[in-house]
Length: 114
Length: 113
Image (cartoon, rainbow over all chains, first blue to last red; front, side):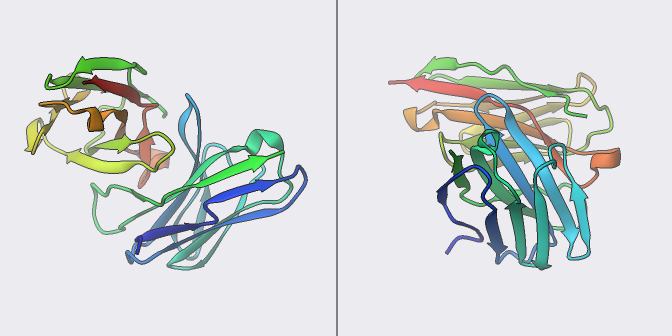
């Protein structure tokens, strides 16, 4: 089983719909992240959370919201989806302990908004 | 603070050659650096981390760090077609990005049989 699980893996929906992407992890990490990736633009940080009570905006948070339901679960919502939110979305985790902590990524959710 | 620069490529090398991927960064305080490999449509996969000046070797991969020149590189020896992917360089965030990673946009590597 994957350590970082994202659901759904693929989603096609219409403009204006509310969408939730879910991420769960079994790594026991405190820190969780949501990124989007568009061709040629690299990874862009949407939101991140260092523990259940700590939620922070990333560089492109407009149009998105998140919920950290538990240490192991971090959900990303698009309240009213628009076509330019079509992208590949990744959840990642990292350990809180000390410096030099890499991030570990889920398999991604491919989201298409028509 | 998005100053991790990579040549987007594509970098094309023949099978069996050494592929050299380069990354520069602008924050002198950065201490930790990471290389990820990402196949098309897949998630980034950590392949190397480096924290100290000098070389770090792991199998066919060698990471090189020069903090004075603000330069980190990844060498892939005996390149294989299966190494064809985009390679992302990342550094530890500082200040307002403490605890995050700052990613470059990646270099696309193509290894020709």
